[in-house]
Length: 172
Image 1 (cartoon, rainbow, N blue to C red):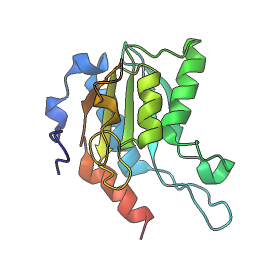
Image 2 (image 1 turned 90 degrees about the vertical axis):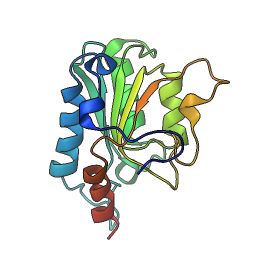
Image 3 (image 1 turned 30 degrees about the horizontal axis):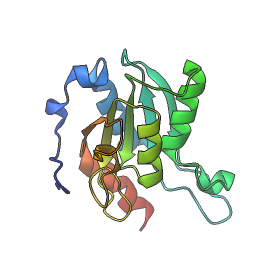
């Protein structure tokens, strides 16, 4: 499915240079998340939506990871992307994540899209589109707003069906 002006991206079309090296790291993460997503322990009767994110450094090595923790922590900002960004910034000792890649199973929302722009993430790779809250081409396109001083490169729809299945399974 293509949404907005963004084309779907196949694994073969992900350039290694866009991810540092190699593009396989991003694809492997999305595949692992889609196939092996561990069950999130329920808090009361609620469990967090199964979204996972990693930050790859400029050399392609994994800097940090995050998964949704809103229900577990009671923090409305505890989205996978935000947690991964915070952890990567702490590891690097600075908030600017130039040259880094965010890989996430679901299209980022407006909060996460804004955070990744402010963190100066160079590349975003995501799996499933989120037509209700997506801000990387579906509902909004925060990351390509020409009024902003930073616009990351985006690879959308990578392993889309597998990542979308996570959402379908969770919301059954």
